[in-house]
Image 1 (cartoon, rainbow, N blue to C red):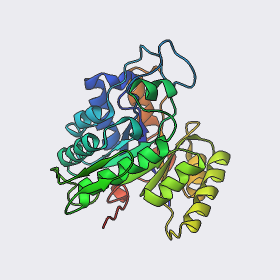
Image 2: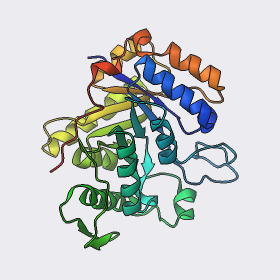
Image 3: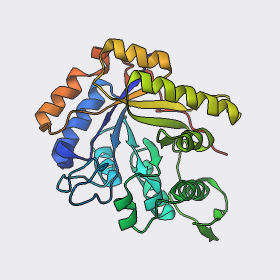
Image 4: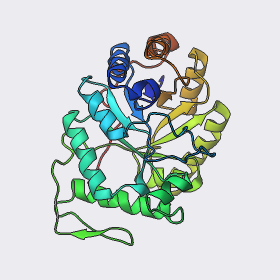
Length: 295
C-alpha cells in the first residue's frame, strides 16, 4: 500500500507567520495530506555552529503553540511534533500541554519525541548530554502514567511524583507516540515504547538499512508488529520514489520543503506534491494516523 503524506516545517520560515501557516495547513488538508509536523529547538547556538540546523535569527515558533494555532484552522489532518526534544522539557508540564493540544484538536495529536543532539542547546536549558536517553525514557514513562494510570505515580532517577492528577487526559484514543533518531538506542526505544518511528532525511539506501535494523530489534524485543514508520526523504519524491519507499515498509512520507520559500511558493510546493500527483495515499483512505493501544 502506498504511504500517506505529511508536511514538515509548519512552525518555521514562511510558516512562522501565523496567517501563512494557516493557509498552508488548510491547503494541505484539502489536498489529502494526512499530517502536519513541527520541529523543536528552544534555543540554538549563536553564532551558528554545526550541527545546528538553524541560523540564530531564523524565526522558529514553539511547536506546541504552532500546532494549537493550526488546530483552529483545520478539521481532520493529524498534528505531529517531529520531534520534541524530550530531555529538555519538564515531563509533567509537557504532558499537560500535549493532552490539552490533543483535546482542543479533537484527538488529532501525534507525539513525536527525540533525545536531542545540540549540546549548546541542552546545556543552556540545564540538561547534560550524558544520560539524556535514560532521562527521556523516564520522562515518557512518567507522562504515560499521568495520562493513563488510575493513580498516576513514578519514582525514578530524574522524575519522582505520586498523589497527583492532571486533566484533561487523552480521550477517544491514546495519543500515538513516535520516536525519532537513527542510532541503535533510538531504534530500540521506538520498538520498546513507541507506536511509530520517524527517520529524518533518509535516502532509499539508508532507509533500507535502518529499517532492517528496526525489524531485527523488534524481533529481539519480541514485538510482533513493526512500529509505524515515517520518513522524511532526503530528496523530493516522485511517483517512483513513493513506490520504492512503500516497498521498504514506509507508512508515511513527511515532506520537507526547500528553504526560504515564500508562502505562495510553499503553497505551490504543497500542490505540486499532493498525494494524487505523486501516487501517495490520500488521507481519507486512512481513518487515524496510526493505532495506539495503552493499558
